[in-house]
Amino acid sequence: MADKLFEAKNLKAFYGPTQVLFGIDFAIEAGRITTILGANGAGKTSTLRAVCQTVRTTGSMTLNAGAGEVQLVGRSTDAIVRMGVAHVPDGRGTFTALSVEDNLKLGAYVRRDKGNVAGDIEKAYSRFPRLAERRHQQAGTLSGGEQQMLAISRALMLRPKLLLLDEPSFGLAPLIVADIFRTMRQINAEDGVSMLLVEQNATLALNLAHHAYLLETGHVALSGPSEQIKNDESVRRAYLGY
Image 1 (tube, rainbow, N blue to C red):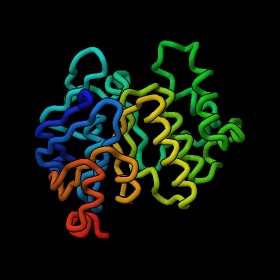
Image 2 (cartoon, rainbow, N blue to C red):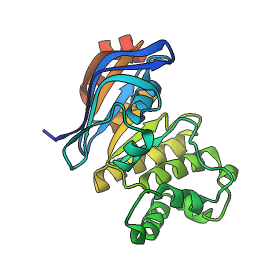
Image 3 (cartoon, rainbow, N blue to C red):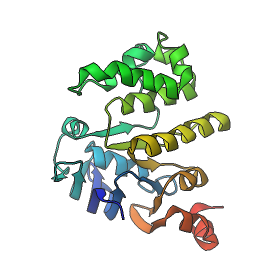
């Protein structure tokens, strides 16, 4: 069994006085892809925001990125980024007025090994050749699929231990989605980047991930190996709607 990179216990999250997560437990194994599934409003995006500490949380979240377990609850978002947690938010979040290349350079702003940044930019271009063709183009003029490729590439410029992805398929054409998910699988296999994927398309997510958690109104309703959940007809009908 792989080592645990991340573990949440009794995790609760709040927007002001409104509670949206109700004591959930989940873990992410090092070098593996974990997905969180559920209907709209189940708490999927809130879980990613809790990991990044952009919403108020209680409970425990520990990250073991090589220097022993570190508690994330109560830390600043900036500190968590410096520990190697990168977030690709819903809506991509690119800097639209900057060029593709400047977006990638910004992704590496906390790194100390500045001499390796140029090589990682070229690696991003080799993974997504469309970005190479548009390296000097303003990010805001890219198509939706190209902006998603840029958002993922910019997050990878951090050389993260854990990559958080929020609905990477949303609003994109099926061929573009297939290309992006194929590249995400490649990144996981070749670089060993652990991922926590939130995705509305359960089939896509289960085909990519190793382990899945199903959220229902802020609670974990079910968890297990993705292959097992994908092949359980009663689970698919009850929780995934297909």
